[in-house]
Image 1 (cartoon, rainbow, N blue to C red):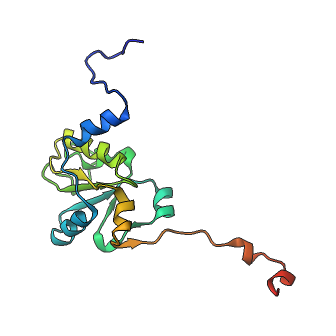
Image 2: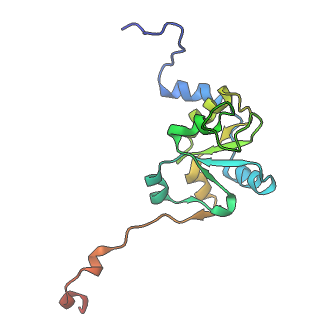
Length: 158
C-alpha cells in the first residue's frame, strides 16, 4: 500500500519515531527536573497523564506547582500563537513534560519544540522515575476496601 501523503516523514515503527523525537530533546532526570523547578519558579512541570492514571498512580506534589494539561490539548495550551493558550505559554518557556514512564512525554515535548517552544523537554522515566527517586508526590487515590465494610455482623466478630 502506498502512502497517501508522499511528502510526509515515515518511520520504521514507533521506536524509530521515538528516537527521532528524542534527537531534538535534552531530556532530564527526575532529580534534575526537581532541582530546576525548585530553583527557578518559571519552570513548568507539565503532567500530561489522563485523570484516571493520575488518580491511580499519584501526582506531582502541589509544592512543585505542576500544571496538569492532558495530552490531547497540550499543543493548544502551550503554543504562544494559540487562542487557547495558557498565560505561561512562551517560546522561551522551560517546559518539562511528564507522562507515566517517559515515552509519550518525549513525543509531546518534541511537538512543542516543533512549535517553537525551544526549551521544552521531558522527564526520563516519567512519573514512575520521579516516585522511585523519592521526590514529592501526592498519593494515589485508592478505593476503599468495601469487602470489610459490608461484612455481615457475624463475620466481622470472628
